[in-house]
Length: 215
Image (cartoon, rainbow, N blue to C red; front, side, top):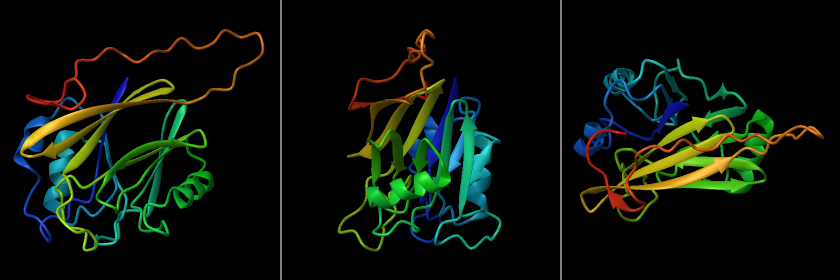
């Protein structure tokens, strides 16, 4: 089992001063094995903060990131699942599922993580899984009427199964929902089917407030 934090579009300090305190209370060191960030971290201090949560941090370059060190896309493998990460400004129209599907095919990934819209989304299409963690700070997009809902996601990867928990700050309370996706593996004729099932981990009921640290 690998627990992966999916986060992005923080825009600190240009559009907002910090992560919500209730999110910081949840994101404690020692619980998360890897961080996949969709970019627009925007300052070194925020990147260093992410490294305190997990030293294994992978960040792609967002359209507001000034550093040239981050790539435009990355690929990580948690066998048998291959995950691609982009910021999402490459997708035209913004957030368009057909465009994202084309990018996923080009990257040859099972899961494509993207940001840019500042709105959480998790959807299956064409045997692939598409996740947008939204904006962890609820930063203004410049093209959205009103304030986006602050959100991030945790992906519990167990073999061919991903259990995604989305954390959203709604009316001052952290609420959690769960989405499960399974990669369809090629079945060799005569071979037994995989019996891998999601691990039973403590979590709030869907839509319920969350307290304490993750897990």
